[in-house]
Image (tube, rainbow, N blue to C red; front, top):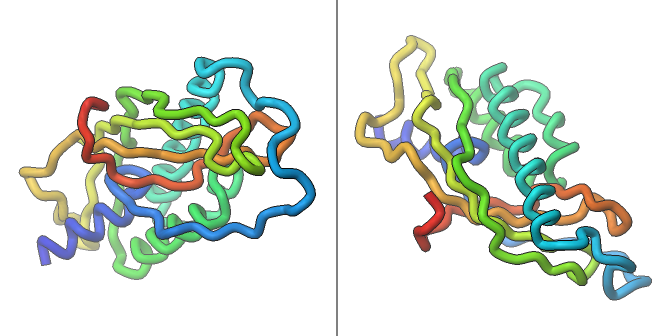
Length: 186
């Protein structure tokens, strides 16, 4: 039971603890092969946009989780449809199992891995490494018993990819989030 709870915590906290994105497929528009103008003038601007995007994604995700996983569609503004679907399944599982999520993860660093200003249709335009401190995040069963192992690692590293909200906008959406095992982020 304890192991299953830890696995569930990792799944539910794709916003807060860990998550994997399945291989993505896209219906790409056909007219143009690349973005008409670079969405960000510099890598620094791309990093700022990625930091703002992932911060909003984490904040609304944690809010949804602490509210019992309801109204998950609020993530639509911050993530691609595929990523929202992944998160919604975690919200559903939280509700179905009667679990209680508490806390707010904190990003301690966001490091630009790549900025591809000419990414096809803005897909994968920015990739960043994120260090997340989940020490204040807990998961409890319906009786209030913590399902978090005392030996849990508080810091988790992720590689997060961002797509443009549309080809003419510099607004980024989280499109994938995978644990990063390469180190050097936290």
